[in-house]
Image 1 (cartoon, rainbow, N blue to C red):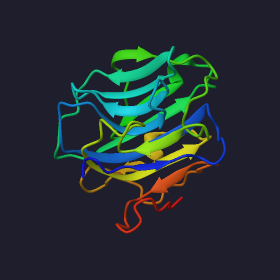
Image 2 (image 1 turned 120 degrees about the horizontal axis):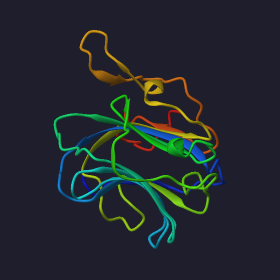
Image 3 (image 1 turned 45 degrees about the vertical axis):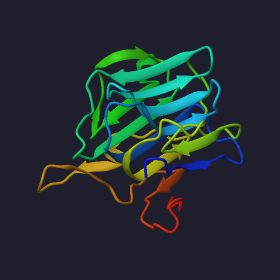
Length: 205
């Protein structure tokens, strides 16, 4: 269902300036803004992964004043394929170009239609006990993601790359998930496989 989603508010703060998100998704609907991972509120606190109405991928932080983001300049319109997306928030990094990173299907995105890297040591909203985390929608429960998602990882306080979560199949040459990757999840991290339909929020971390 396009309006289904999960939400959780952390019971305590984790690491606010370092985390990695990895997930697999398959799109069902194009041409509309759809937010598939979100932390923040319904006013002006937004830390999110989304597809724009032009079918561009965007990783964004907005606090009401400051706006930082990566938006690759290629479109994502294949509704028959699974995309593996990895987003890294690492604002303690001394190299400004590495503070937020995006990988798609094992490859780091380096060509952007829009890019604004955050200031050093900026706290995000993921892993912050003040803000609710959403999967499949945003805080106002609108702009739902329309499609399928699986194997969602959040590593609180740890930076990883796409190859930690996926690998190339030696026979087919297709990028595929590592079913049990060797990563550390930290205080508020999780691993959602969505393998149990009676308990979609079951954490396998």
